Length: 96
Image (cartoon, rainbow, N blue to C red):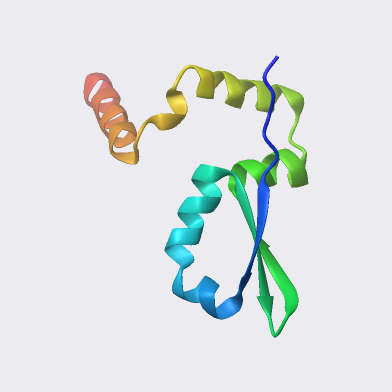
């Protein structure tokens, strides 16, 4: 049985979020971090990964979750956009 780590929640002010946006995106995606962005001391928005969103907000069907986890275990979630494009081009060339 796989134990899933709960995301860490960090608080950041809007100005810092704006200046570090790219860094925050990487942190949220790679380190399972949720970021609460505040303005003038009031929490305004939450930044979370798409995986976190799908798993905890959308509540996708169990079958889709199992397919995604199976793909992750097989390492298929690490293929780059360029590799995907090359696979599509090769398939089309073969069929063309």
